[in-house]
Image: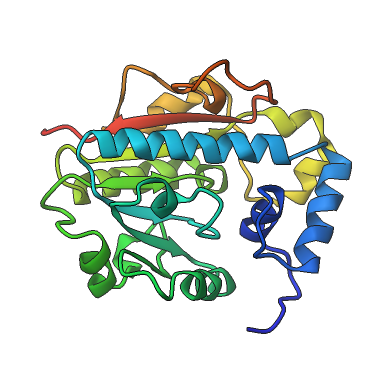
Length: 248
């Protein structure tokens, strides 16, 4: 696999998490962003910790198959490393990230990686879906939707989450995060996120979930979602929620 000439958010996050799957172009971009904003590693460690707590909570509800959108690099506490008895299908739209993920998971019989556009579930290979998320549409599964909402407008996001609601079986659970307006005070960093990036005030989050019903934990800063010990003190950049699909 040749070295890419463009940075990837997924590989930048791997760098911030202390991983090994990134390139000099990603490190340069990560350093440039930190010059405009400040240290990012603590923020993304907390987002990854929220992922871990959320998928463990799903597993405790009996979920043993997970579909992950915008999966990034499948290491550093990603889903299959947290719920080790589950099967997991990671998906992304970036071909370099997909190839990287496939190489990392080449020896795994319970985690796979393939193309998948979160806004069009029909883009996922049905064979992969049924292999790694057996019972999709017929039994409860876990859907992980992290790092994506900020790049979808309200209409697209609500439609996408509603389509996932319709496709998933009753009892399925969704983990999703939202970007706050944290970067509003850092215009240089905000400009680096590109024109698609959308910040939202916390009161805007709940309506976007549509028919998905948040657990009693609500939509809260990721550090405050079922913390293990005292919540970490990091900028309030991400809010997270675990939401359930009812029986209609």
